[in-house]
Length: 301
Image 1 (cartoon, rainbow, N blue to C red):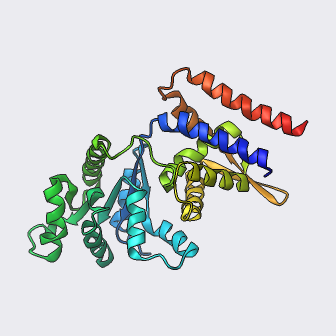
Image 2: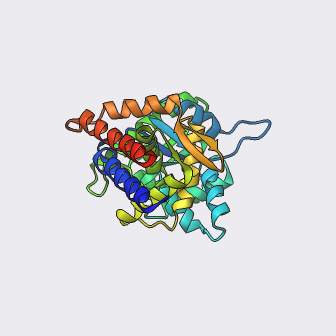
Image 3: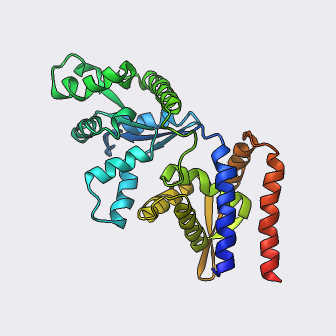
């Protein structure tokens, strides 16, 4: 991109971020769901619960290991503390289904971390409820002191468990929003924030080259005093998540790639924009569209 092109994209991204993105309702509850893995013979409780939870359109379930793989591929030096911080920064809820030795270790780690403990909700098999084990006397006791609904004891009826979880998710999210330290919008220097922001960009630009999108986002990060150190670590998984959710698709044009919204993505952005409380919002939207069209026409003339 030439200097004028960079300046235009930076200005437009900034306008969309400050005047639209910050004012859009972000009603999703983003849940990192930890637990056991399914085998060929047995489906894990985690995988069964994911299906039930995703019946609610306001719940987005993510598996931490999917994102950790991307992080470790990008930087082999990531340690457990870095990964835990990433979870804390990129989720509303960390829900742990304690069905495997690994998930019990995760419960201990996340309840022992000040950055994550307030987001943890644990599912414990009911048969463990009266045990005087480390898990019950340590992590579970800590969570129940915060709030009794942070620990849910489950048996076979996962529909009941799903309902309990949804209630706990909403109450926890409500508590977070009532906190003076929590903004009503997701910062764009997080995977979840980028997941909300990139579709807005594509809505107004219609399509944008991969390199331009990446470069312009980095400049927006710098403008808002966000570190660009971990940008690629967040950017790549965000694109993968947007593909998975069928929000965006990629076109190959010569040696370049460009991103566009799918029909599903387009409709989702329309729904979000119609719910904003921005004064004279249509005038604002039209002014952004006009400046983009004018820039394209000017460059092509």
